[in-house]
Every structure is written in structure tokens, then in C-alpha cells.
Image 1 (tube, helix red, strand yellow):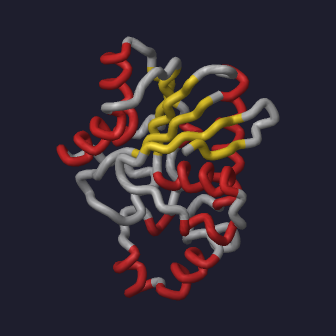
Image 2 (cartoon, helix red, strand yellow):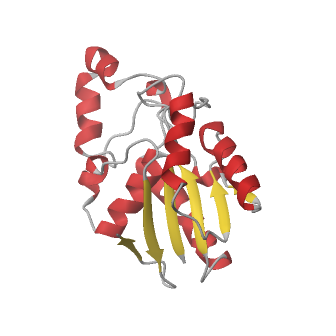
Length: 189
């Protein structure tokens, strides 16, 4: 399966840890996503996070391409608990030590009342395995979040878990993976 990953564009609430907050896209965010897919296509299947910053664009694209959109809640962003909606700058003022531990090894430190990264990785990996089983041999576009993309790209690149948050994924980024029968992933450039 060829899996194209598209990160949502800029959101109305701006940066920070948006997690499970259901922010809308800005006009710039819509433009970022439209531009990302403008010279791409050939998808057989569209899959999206159910959050509107992903799902509404997927609906627009699906209507244009005449493809149904499948929403999978397992492909939502990491839930940041008490840190949701806060920026790194805000957290540096109140929780600098905890934020540092999270950035150093997100698997070893969970934000207060947040989702452990190991559990996040498990749910995303299981969703990709289900997707590969259903859509083997097809080209799939997944409209999703930065955390989901970082996780999948880190895996495809063979990075150690401590480097998860060092994977760069900008708004409107479009990247491609090949998912093999044994669920091994590689990045396609």
C-alpha cells in the first residue's frame, strides 16, 4: 500500500498543543492543504481523522475526486491532557521541567492527564495495520495530524523513540510511505 500523509493546515487557534481540540482551519490553512495536493492525486481511498481540521478538507477533496472519505478516530492526534491548547512558551513558564522531560523522551513522560505516547503509538499502528489489510495494493491519502505523521515517519526512518519529536512536519506537509505486507514502512521520496 502506498500511504500519502497530509497534515492539516494552520488552525484558527494557532500553534501550541492542540491535541483533541476540534479547531477549525484558517483561510491560510485551507490554502496550505489545497496547495499540497494540487499536483498530486491518483488516490484510491481517502482516510481522515474525524477532527474538523482534517475531516472538512478530506470531505472537500473527496467530493472533488468522487471518493468516499473514511474517518478513523484512532488516527486523531495525541491527547495532551492538561497541556491541551497551551503553547510551549506558556508551558515553559509553568511546567518547564515537565516539558523538558517530555521533549527529551515523550515515551517516558506523559503530560498530566494526557495519553501516554506508547498507547498513542499502539492505536495509530493498529489503525495503519487495519488500513493496510483493507486497502492492500492501493494508494491511500491519510489526512491527519503532526503527531501521527511524526510517529509514522520516525518508524519508517528507523529513529530511536527519543527522536520522535525531532521529526519536522509543517502545516500542509505531504509525505509518502510504502507499507509492506508485514506492516514494515519505508519513506518514499
